[in-house]
Amino acid sequence: MNYSDVFGAWEAHPEQFWLDAAGDIAWFEAPKTAYEAGKGWFPDGKVNACYAALDTHVEAGHGGQVAICYDSPVTGTKRQVTYDELLKEVSAFASGLRHLGVGQGGRVLIYMPMIPEAVVAMLATARLGAVHSVVFGGFAARELAKRIDDFAPDVIVTATCGIEPGRKIPYMPLVNEALAMSVHPPHHVVIKQRPEQQVEFEEGRDVDFDGILEAGGTEPCCPCASTDPLYVLYTSGTTGTPKGVVRDIGSYLVALKWSMTNIYSAQPGEAYWAASDIGWVVGHSYIVYGPLVNRNSTVLYEGKPVGTPDAGAMWRIISEYNVSVAFTAPTAIRAIKREDPQATHVSKYDLGCLRFLFLAGERADPDTVEWARTSLGVPVIDHWWQTELGWPALSAFPGLGDTLVHIGAAGRPVPGFAFDILDEDGHPVPRGQNGAIVIKCPLPPGAMTGLWNAPGRFEDQYLSTYAGYYLTGDAGYMDEDGFVFVMGRTDDVMNVAGHRLSTGSIEEVIAAHPAVAECAVVGAADELKGQVPVAFVVLKAGATEATIANLEQDLIASVRHEVGAVASFRRVYQTAVLPKTRSGKILRKTIRSLIDGQPFDTPATIDNVDAIEAVRVAISDHT
Ligand code: COA
Ligand code: AMP
Image (cartoon, rainbow, N blue to C red; front, side, top):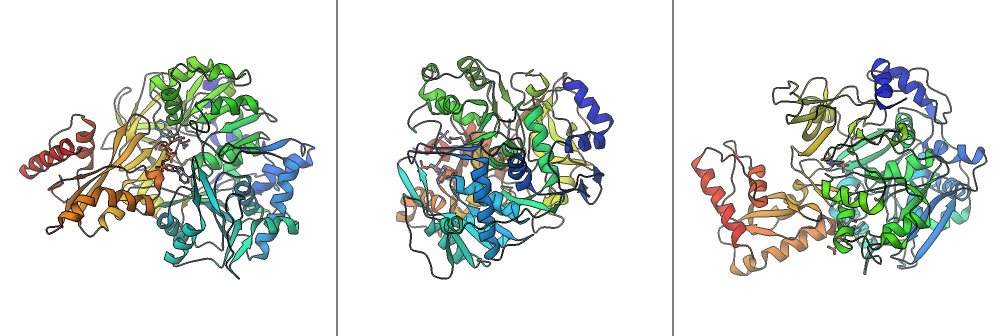
């Protein structure tokens, strides 16, 4: 069946379509009902994510296959973990967690670098029927503390350090600072002692990760309701308070399995590589659960696309592990292209194994896509999704033999996602015209089921703007052939090197500076990272010369310390006033246009004309 046939089959009988797809994963009790309003997908199914990802493959005789190819140029380490070995470690770790009080429905927060132990912790939590929340290792203490307080974990699992090129990032000072700030510190912290950094344990609180594995306990898979939560993944919204996206178990596994086959065309037994981080949704879906459920060998890469050691790192990995399908962010390709414009590194490796390169996480500019396509000689496929959706909603479909792309478009709707483009009044716009990108409800399997700890907020934020639709927060248009072009966010969410960050969390830190009266952070266009945050600050009357002189450095240091280096925050503009709406809302879109040198409609009020001039002067005065 081709794409149109499959999409048509879903449109005609959506429930039967997903019940059929559900047949491709290992259930304890297969669902008979596809969907029930108020309950969700597969309400009568019984499942365990760890069972579907590990045990079932081992039981079928594939225990000797490599499950994880861990490759860490930053530590000079490589390790291949088979399905047998991974299952043994996961079972032992689950047993250890249970002894620390984690049971079905319990909560485990995982703050770890890209090491196999992070995957072990995730799967062990799933094995117990507990819920994990992985926090990206690049977030600093304050962001970690916000997530600890919202999630209220029973246990935190961490490691002694992360490793960035040329520097070690000790985690324990960050964890301890976050715990000191948080209202809900857990009783236990399980710590993986990395050879690069050893720490003293805090008596009574800390538990040795390796000690748990050495104890060699075993733990069966807990049969869970398909609709039970598998994880909470915090993502950035408009404010500084992160939103805990909740994902269920069964429907997520069904969606991932469907996508591994029909979108990515990854065959069981092959190596698949998503060059992301387990702290992001791509890591959850396509480093851990998707490839393991599909019985692929997943690559876990602790390194960068450039500098570890060179711009050939991605090609080395693909060649060394025989990767058939790879996935990365456009930023990574831009970084490689900048260092190696002639793609000289590509010719050093045999890339005959690679069939497709997928890109997502931010807009893929046509130059970058074209450079990758000609350099690698394989189809390069942009596809679009969000933390909330859990898996791609726009794509091409190599698994259905369809690699058709339209340059600049993020693809055609994946079965399950009925897209519309609406004007401000909620009316569909003609093809080719810009508007808000929305998806008809109900969302398909795999999409968020709610926001953690915030009843009603999912409906408020995503479902209330246009009745019957999920609001993506992105704007764009659909062409005559049904390809959707995603042009950018309609809110204040930034995308920095494929990392989703909120302007609000940086503003919170800046506003806390004693000399700052008010501030606005916007994402400015950046050639490499897509966007980087910049701040406009209005000083309090009476700010001293010395404070003003050091302001930029101080604020950069504070954001680095409190949000994390990953924010890539490096620029502060001092302005006398900020442009605002009549109701006092800062005109961030206007400021963004000013900094990017883009045209905009000048808001009517005289004050704003002055304020816009003040911002313009601040930009041109900055050295
Ligand atoms: N832990 C601690 N610090 C981290 C971190 C982590 N997990 N990840 C990044 N950082 C730090 C970096 O060390 C860097 O610090 P610095 O300011 O001292 O140099 C800062 O955060 C910014 O990091 P990064 O965004 O990686 O930028 P970079 O300039 O070091 O590298 C790229 C540029 C393009 C190579 C890099 O951004 C990249 O690989 N991007 C692809 C991202 C991606 O795959 N996203 C997937 C989402 S789907
Ligand atoms: P995240 O939740 O971190 O995956 O970020 C989701 C957001 O990233 C989307 O709402 C888009 O704004 C942006 N995004 C992701 N993929 C693409 C893409 N292929 N093209 C354009 N924007 C994208």
